[in-house]
Image (tube, rainbow, N blue to C red):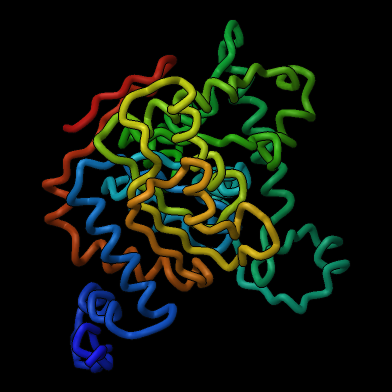
Length: 343
């Protein structure tokens, strides 16, 4: 019978005290997005066990949504090796690292009244416009301190900003954690954010020479520094495509070991049929050479603020030994990017 060649589902059984990593392991045998969540956890464990550089793309309002400490944890413990983020997430990170708060709100607010009170709304969350303006000034002052005798990658810019914040911050955030862990951060659409707004409003910072094309070359080198590369996309947007294109760039640069990303995870709410890159499937990306023919891949259709707390807790409780033994790249991140694979 054909059923003899199939694997049966396993109904999930609640038990007192069952650890979260065991829950996700067992969810691989249920159905729908529950199975995909279990598969995301399993695939991440496989990356930690392999000779892999792991990229994370971070889009959406994840910092306003309370995900700062999760992303910091993933960087600090080296569940990821390189972060590519929107400028908005990094701006909100600076805001929180310097003591700012986001506040519980409602999506049904009177937005005219909020604007008059100086509150900015991100769906059901508020932030202080005055606090954001203070960060604008902070970024202007920081940028004016930097030497402008050469173009600077966004990776170096945020490394140096993380260094400054680490010396004075009230709390750790993504940038300070990345500085301490020597993990590179890239922001390919830096102008499309409050960072870009801040640097545009002062004549002294208006022409700061960002080397965004150098970011492209550097990330191509990163994607090829280990036996394989893996990607974790939180949302889509520019971070996702910027990481996707590393394999294409590496091919054009004739870098060896260019076969497309071998491990691929995406957590999205977008659909592919509208033709946008945020919702594009890994199968579509394979046609461009961005994803390996034989890639281990999974797409989870879910709000990332539901998934990340569960997934990060499972990684923390179930993968400590994998992380301790992991072969991972290390970096030098001052002016020139230094890559030291497999330590």
